[in-house]
Length: 64
Image (tube, rainbow, N blue to C red; front, side):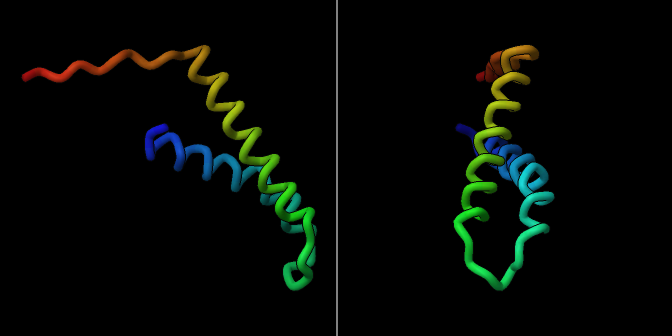
């Protein structure tokens, strides 16, 4: 997995989990935080896979 793809997943997961995380008390430790973040990462990865499937990237060739 490329660094660009990791950053895209991180950004998407942040957006997907922000709404749920904002509802939780930041000072109270809870397993729900980890659940929401893990779920958001899985959702973001799924979205990126669907994008890759629908619009595949062309292989880049290097000129030597």
